[in-house]
Image (tube, rainbow, N blue to C red; front, side):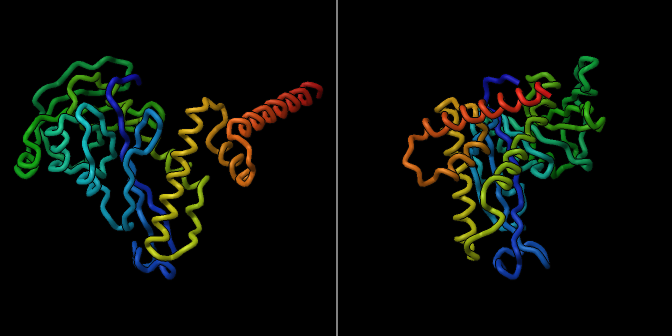
Length: 272
């Protein structure tokens, strides 16, 4: 999707720890963990806000720390549905897109036409019907029902934006999975599975270093307009960390070697 507004994805991931080594991070009776709350700018994707907390902290509480940008979209899963906190988006002139919980009670004010063949089942304007919910969110909501073409599952979204087409709302929510890819890349490529210290400060410092490495490599890749992936760049840097060679020259040589290797493999394959 091409939108003039900024689109952010908000989510968290849990980093498991050994309870006997990290007793300060007790998560469950036999488990310890810290939680990485991340607000990801989907144009990058670059994290614009990160908070590291104990594993048992509720995800929805991180909404209290957000500095909301007027006109921007914030995409979240249903774990962040708290109407008192979501109403802050309305007051700030920002937009949210989230999944609805199954126990939400509402009254339909309007049904909008939907285009057949798009997977959108309904597009409605609603009003929360429970007195407590109405007190926390005294405004209209938009309810979009869509069927996922891959899984066939029916999904219901809530948003305070009434202008975008209903299919765009569903596509915005689907883009939220890019923050999941960010978490997966961080865990697979950076050293945050094994910690060099056991104190809270040591763990948080190592996680922050990992995030800084990701951001720096992403910035360098963009500034130099490199074709190498972030994983390939990390491999190059780790092997040549003590070499006094300009970074541009180093990655250029690596890219040339990869092209030569690919051409050779293709030649061998064609010969046989």
